[in-house]
Amino acid sequence: MKIKVSISMEDLTLKDVEKIVKNEIYRNKSHFIELATQKYLEEVKDV
Image (cartoon, rainbow, N blue to C red):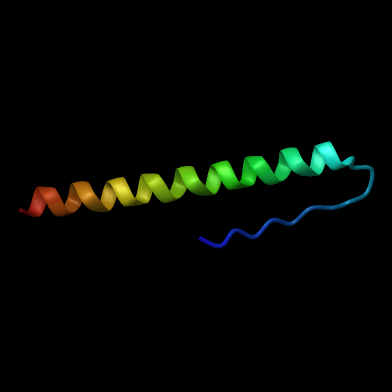
C-alpha cells in the first residue's frame, strides 16, 4: 500500500509531523479495510 502525505514543514516540530503521518496512515488503512469489506460482502451476496 502506498500512502502520499503532504506536509508543510513551517513551524512544525518532529512530534507534529509524526502525528500527522500516523493519522494519514490510519485513515488510509481504515479506508482500505472498508473497501475490502464492502467488496467481500458484495461477493458473498452474489453467491
